Image (tube, rainbow, N blue to C red; front, side, top):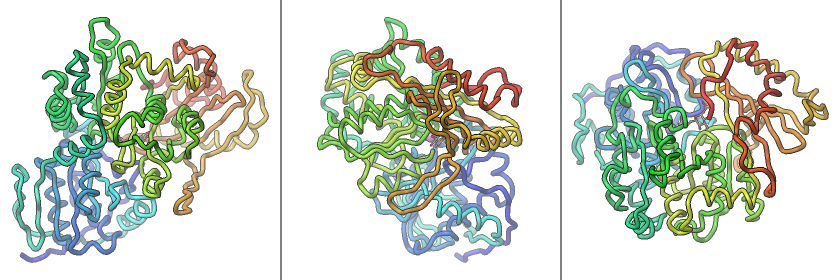
Length: 543
Ligand code: VG1
Ligand code: CO
């Protein structure tokens, strides 16, 4: 079989964002769009000849087409082997595990995560390195530079590979092995958690609902929760992956999981509700009468991780993205362990995890994970919660309240303004940036500004610097406003406003979140003029 070298012309818009290259499917369907991007990735890497590449995706529309292209390009570029999930499926954390477990050179994760799918929806490609985590900026910058000048790509002229059955095939000089997408991941979970205790919990009548949102976690949740852990059939809902996510929005938040939230607020509902996103790396946690914010969940998981066998020796440290609330910081302080604040996106946690400086990481955007892989992991978070509930024999609400009574409560919300005109959004953030220097010391609506800056991260492991990661204004009382633009949207700009206010351990823990944050909401408007500039009367999504 001969390797073909095909002439191509560059696209100007292949700049990877917070988590890979996300675009409308119609953009990806342009001639050579996928080929250019994958070839640009390979052109930016060295030393993969004869090595293994992992490929898998969340099963969304165009997954099947892009995987076939990726396999051919990998073969033509000299990879020795491709490991691909059966049916082209691998959740993002499972892909990370497969890369690590089989010591692959890296992997391609095909997903646009929580963005809608289908022919009119979004698609995405992300490259992960040998530690199983998203490529660091050094690589994504090199890939973008390469996409701007690429003029050829390599491929093979072969029929499509059958991804339906497990086993080994050959294409050119490369081996393609189709693997069970769930097995290795389930084994890893069994090592980390006390499955016996969780089985007993279900056997005792504890009931949960897990919403897989018609996305990739369905097969994982069926196998682990209903299979290995004995949860009753029907515990997992929407558990069959669909290329369009059943025309839904696979984002596990209170907007798209409203029905489950309502169910958990009724006396006859289950004890526990959880959901995961399109590619299986996010989690939503709701106990009976208690929604747990992702920032609180990070703090709670860190404080209780030692109850699970995989973390019984304690945790080395915690990392959170900058916009995530400081709730976890208080846990780290009490445990006397390292605490790190990184820019948004999982790629910034990789170095800290590899260096053994942190064990648990999290983001306010419903992402939590640990050193077991190098991605955030939705089902992992659900299983750690279950393990904690099984050991503590308390309800989610009781555990949350005890936590606040110990550490205080960080009231927290995020307001998103989606599909804002990019020029308006950029000007808004630029103007805010321009005024930061004058803010410290000023008293705004009764709150004194302690600091105001645009977050710059200095990676303590490799010494790299990432600037302009979000505007933050902190106040003397611990309150904070953060404003940044999303790096995962595909249309216009998404403006994210993150608001936080601290109430001490003996303070008021029962306020309604939006009411508790109302003064900060007003203050943000007077500082940034979002409503006036965007013409929006309210956020598109409040989480
Ligand atoms: C968002 C979240 C961020 C998360 C990223 C990828 O990025 O804020 O915390 O890591 O999505 O998650 P942004 O740039 O849009 O704010 V996923 O589950 O979409 O891979
Ligand atoms: Co995701």
